[in-house]
Length: 328
Image (cartoon, rainbow, N blue to C red; front, side, top):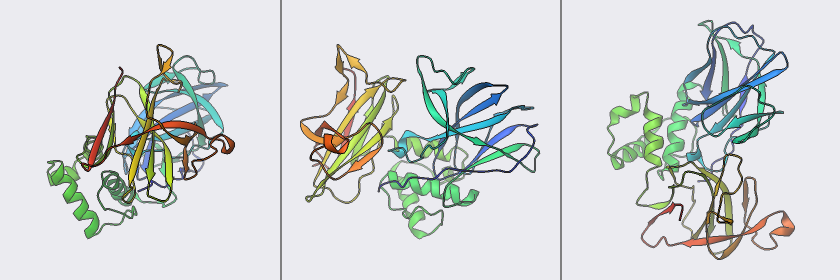
């Protein structure tokens, strides 16, 4: 199933900044958030704060004095090709892993600029300030939690669609089958670690479908292509963090699957070994581009703003295939 792009909105009204600042997640994705603090012409950023669906996370403790508060959110790599669009106007520096950057408008080595959106949190009943991450679906907490479960079940190959936050027999059957296949007790559903457990299980190599596993110390960006007998559709990019696995979303029963992946550094530059790019592909030339893409036209790549890229055919004859990316 192709994951729909989620619209990120921030629900807010004017409120004085004088208490803890919390970010609450009413999206169907496990997200990582970074905040920016503008104060007296200086801008600092810090992150990443992992926030599960229907949960909140304190990102600043104590009295907060700031001219502006800014926010960036990204979904975990398990969700595939950049499901959360970024449309903020402030370009601030972040790092790939946990970070605190005192001067965030001029990036140093290992830092990249990403768009931040200004937010004005509300004051909650507990006296703290809160900003919400939300989708167009406008889930409440209960719906966001269930939609988050449904989304991970779909990625794992179970029929829990539509992802709507509404419980029913199909969702319950898919969840029961998922737990059984992973040897998990039904008690895990009520655990505060449910999403951590599900993400880890989804990232475990599967006996069915395609799995990418990143055995390198680098971030890997991957693309997939499927041949349904009428046309070949290429799609990317999927972020695979070091020492993790990912199941790319594949719809229907394609006649052939192709894969391409490349390692990138903290500045998103292609990693090279002995002056050669560290990548994994093959001889089938298909179209890609640097940003998120999906195309069913595989001719004249350059004329359409794409680049021809060598994909490798994946042998799916046994029903499942795990491709492991390693440094030679």
